[in-house]
Image 1 (cartoon, rainbow, N blue to C red):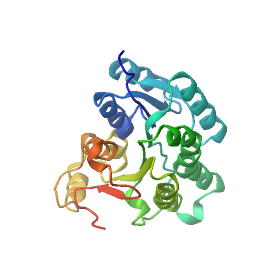
Image 2 (cartoon, rainbow, N blue to C red; image 1 turned 180 degrees about the vertical axis):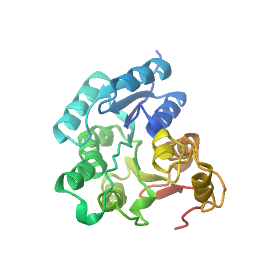
Image 3 (cartoon, rainbow, N blue to C red; image 1 turned 45 degrees about the vertical axis):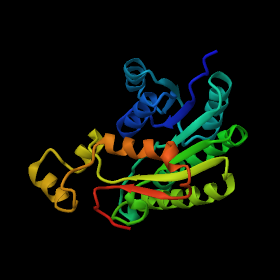
Image 4 (cartoon, rainbow, N blue to C red; image 1 turned 90 degrees about the vertical axis):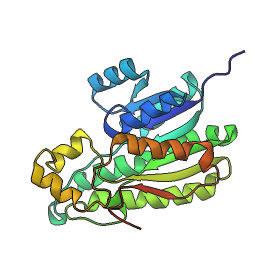
Length: 246
């Protein structure tokens, strides 16, 4: 009798870095559920082209998160891998930041991983040999202007990672994957990387003299979910070409 392939769940898994992580998990043999918030066309395309199972859920909505988790557990089983990748930026100067700006970013980037991990944790603990990877950001360690909500959420995610690593051990390992500058449509637009002088300015700050690819981030995920990292938990893995050395 053929054993079913293990299950992975990736939030924000149909675009950008999340799509690269989802694709890599499929390549590693996982049935991969990709949660998405709103872009139905990207979800349809990702499902058709890469064999993902697209499930709609806004991770900022705790009720939607828990409903999605119940659906996945009932229809697809217990995840062996959970990747909390979904995130949102709403950048403004601190004095201009509204309560809604603050709450939306915290709800998505910090509360979302909390609620989803809590929803899956009992089943993952019972199954054992499971892994949670939280996708952080360099901003969670090094502050920047106009990003107090994002930086606070990502800093909180680092501590969430460490606390969960303590509480869910030894059955579930929990680590934080921190991408640096990564070549995505969002980053190209945000940092005007299509303009040579802006790209050159960014490259001058990176010892490897290149912007990371989404495959670089997927390579790190492959390590964190694989057997070579079996003794690694509660850690942060920074993939940034040496831009920030902590």
